[in-house]
Image (cartoon, rainbow, N blue to C red; front, side):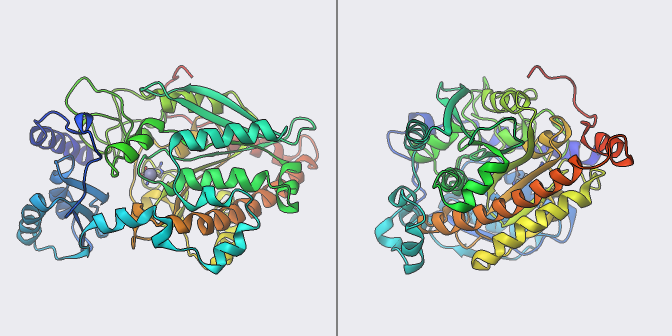
Length: 464
Ligand code: ARG
Ligand code: ZN
């Protein structure tokens, strides 16, 4: 769409002129303080031009969109005290009302990873028994701790292997855990987390699922009898560490863009309809799609690892927050795959089991319908380019009370409900695959399946 392209070009120019100061984070001896930062929530933006006007704040210092401004939905804007008046004046000019939903995020930051403050409820104590490594999941863990956790698991359980699938821009290894009870060529399920650095519940949940799959209980044993599992707990390893050491609100990778601003949005960097809607050409934007598809070693390594494993039948990627079960495609409106209804059917099974656990409600649909169109996401690529029939993006807890700063005492319940959703979905997928196998060869279904599974166009051949 011409209109869209134009918007991002304009935003790009404005945003880069506003960040004409060297990126400060690199030289900070201590993490950036969010003292006095507040979170504003606008009323739903009823017209396209209102959303467009707010977008000029994208990439400015002291401003972070927690929810991008889009027509017909409210926008969440984290702002420094210095920018507060500026934003409030802009909102007033536009006639858009807002609430201050978090007065000082510093208070939440202090609490999110504080076991003492969060306490530990009876519910979680009960759950501890199902999770041998309970204390590990009481807190958000650092990159090294998660890596060591995975390696330890591999050294203690013969069904687990750890593999380094590539190096990040800063040279950290990206770990892939395979869990397989052996016994031939099973279909596989791929799970990844930590695409976006600040979405801490995502790596935590992916790691929790590793723990569940290896706890030797009947539910996990039965899953392992039907599937092999591949889990990359943190894709964006540099960004994740940076949220612990430099800037808690960091989203992107940490690659140097030979300019002032650092990082690419890894979930705009995948080679399927790359650089189309909902991504930015501006290296200072939080949704910068990068100089080319798969410019980031993190997305390239993961894409290669996926392509090298043709038995993957289900792709799951964890983000936060909003509690959404997203079905492809996300790159544009009204671009449902031909087997969309089948993808929804399976997702529904997962969503129901997830919600049945603690009543956490999820909405199910495409990203453009529930959020916004955004091209270059891993889910779209998994479906459209890698040809994985069932590909989903889960936006985990919560719906905005804490947002990215979800207190760490929600790791275990989030992990439990997400595992239950995954388990139910996998079971149903197993049944579905078995049914397909018993169909008469050459029957009408065989051709139909072939068509559904064949990757659709839209991407150039990237070297994977
Ligand atoms: N919150 C995610 C993001 O903005 C949603 C991605 C959904 N998938 C997609 N292909 N747009 O990256
Ligand atoms: Zn995300």
